[in-house]
Image (cartoon, rainbow over all chains, first blue to last red; front, side, top):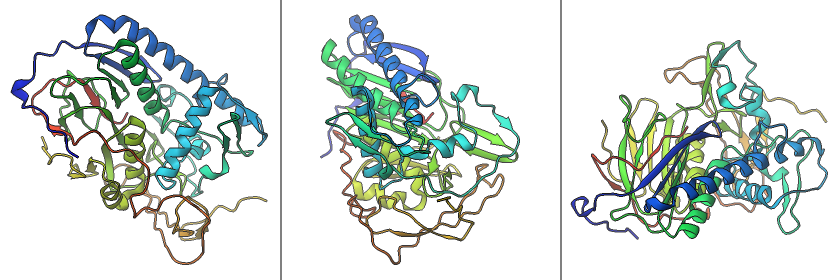
Length: 324
Length: 88
């Protein structure tokens, strides 16, 4: 069902409060419809992110996730937070027919993304690019009730595909409940909204390149849409890229090859009932390649796809393109 | 048992959560800097043969459990956005 928004002219002057800072190697943006709660909200969000980082980071040697590398397949009791994050990651894998797979950790580390992205050298010598399917999400056994996980020896988990979106959903819901106002949480472009939306909805610009709301990109197709809740996420091969030898690599790994997903799509944005679902679909679409349009249409999620030449396609009720 | 690394063109049998895909042919061609500037790997999936015990949803039926949004997005030209979704 399509929600009809009032005309833009009816929108009151927004009195939103916003804060922006860096965490998890990306930009965190918090917007509230009630300015008075901003300081409290920021503290709560920062604490949430710190806790999730300690539980789920692939790059911190002291993270709970990293500790699983040494358990050699032994059943391991884990925290409620990591249990939930793993549950989300495995659900994303199932929902995407295996295209968004948390067992890509070894593959992505092998091609150079083995530390916080800011510390990954933008250029370097050639690396061996081997076609090798990742172990597969079905290798991971998670007992949610008993908070136990078994990860086979040699399988390295990477929750990067879902952790930001999970964090955004979790924080937005929590903050809306605590503060009783509308909340938008953006973690590096993964956007979750909860609570009452502003009149006319939240405005979100989708684009290829990272940026701040105040700084429209000079290049590339971009557009602004209004949405009322749920999540909006964009996956792009133009972000988190690095060069080894003559080859440009990126972070969206095809589980079938263990290598960066090929063309045709460089950027896919999806609007869904949650940020996790939006991000699952957007990442799956990039990895799925030519099957993406058909799949997105079949699941009925509004989506906007930009191919490697900059041409825009929209499906599932996303407004017609407005290329600039 | 050591895992054999498939060469380009090799058939690869593997469970990937696709109900109707159990025999996959992965053909990957690596090249430096195609027109996109991104590693060029052409994955080619064959759907013939084999069976699968996967209970996951297929790529075709839309039965993924992904939650629909509260409404369709609407264009809003000219507004200062509340957020930017950029795929970083």
